Image 1 (cartoon, helix red, strand yellow):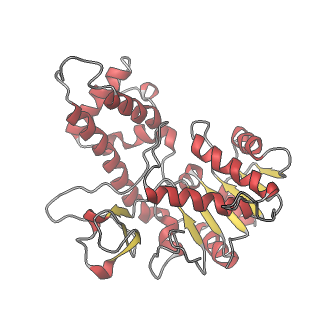
Image 2 (spheres, one colour):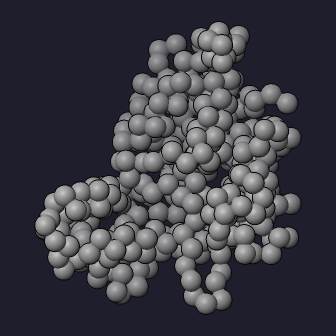
Length: 340
């Protein structure tokens, strides 16, 4: 099989339509989910970077991308910015970040039950299966994982195998709540998990539950899934993510139809902008081969942008360029799915 002709790109707006919070309000929404000691530590960190911060005023919250980027910078320059560690240690800073990410992951797992109740989701998944489409998802949640692979997930379904999948393809270049380091998930019974990247049972492999869920520790130990935190300084150096971005670029380069569903192509996500630009360029010029020549060009895809936000549509049109026809549909996802 070749690459899918139809590619759907989903972002935070897609998950918001299923009851998940948007990135811009995520820190506010998760605040009450944090345990009190974690909330107190995080409050100190936010107040250092934003002296006017008051958790009682929602308008004083930074967005989570900004906060996690500030923590990253703080850690990077921690030793260079002070002659001694002081009252707030690097370990405390790292722990506060991990507690925040773990709480978000745990909360998203809990939201799954209500998300499946949305009536438009089932016909959308049927559409994906009927079209043998690819989905490029920048979300961590497991809604599509559960519904696209009811018989259990596989490395092929995630685009992580050298073999092409015979059904829908789900690419998640920002990671997934169902993916864990091998040294964490390899302790789970063999029949409940699968290695999706790397060698079977190796500590540096990446594993997943066949039927997606969180790791549940009997002794209360916490495991943060393999997700790319929402920061301005994302790190995709790990081989797993290199493979995912390579596959994402490949399918974008040959798509005949490209549908953006609730994805706004954020200005801060330069990695995503780059692979979309590569994809649109390769549609017209042809994908590069290892020897430097190019495959035959497949032609520009028909781009449909489903999003009430005109600015988001304009950003996508700008990256696509004047040679790629774009059709903006200012509707919510559920409206478009029901009507189409």
